[in-house]
Length: 337
Image (cartoon, rainbow, N blue to C red):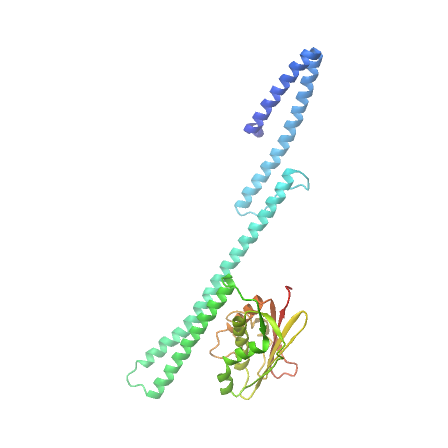
């Protein structure tokens, strides 16, 4: 039998024989031949039962060993437990937990690898497009008889494309820091009115050029917990999106309120709104809606969504009921939900 090849079994059998011999001699000296026969019978019966139990235990261990080997070779196998108590059942349960955990990690690694491949492909595409345009424009600029007006226009286009690449690289670096957890967001008391004043300042000139009226209807008492610089960037990206979809002479309004559970921030515009096809995807990276600006790369709202999530917040977008624009509603909870 295979289990007899186990050194531990051999040592155990030898010990049983020694103990049986000693017990037999002892009983022979004390009780004579009948005592010796009884001792031999009892010892051999005990040894037989012990060997049977060991055989069952090692058989179950052998099955577990084969199953673990199958798992290591990528097969879907659940370790046998038989719903029994005992050391082997406990061991099988713990190994099952470890296997499930390792499988989850393996699946996550595969998912991360796929995501990274898609992510790099998207980045490559987003950078390649403006670079191709820049190369084309540079070839035009090399023409000797190019008119000055045309040259200036082409130069402006190159500047816009360079700024687009700079913004893309900046946003991707910021997002990668959030994804990898290499930064620690501050947890400070933020005055929401001051937050929006800071977000507005970065877009004050473009808003004025478009003659868009920005209205901040936020009381000074409304506050939240977070990192001011990151939150200003998130709010600025949302404000920029609203600005790009609001016609000249339109209005963008920001309101905020606070209760015991969360701080609510809502921004509305009088623009074209969001199409039903775009609504489920507007916070996805590199997604550009049907009404997106030509210079949009589809990452501003994704970055804002990521920042808001890191601040224990949620964001949703939709169209106003009267059909005169879109809204973004954010809730920043004061406890983990």
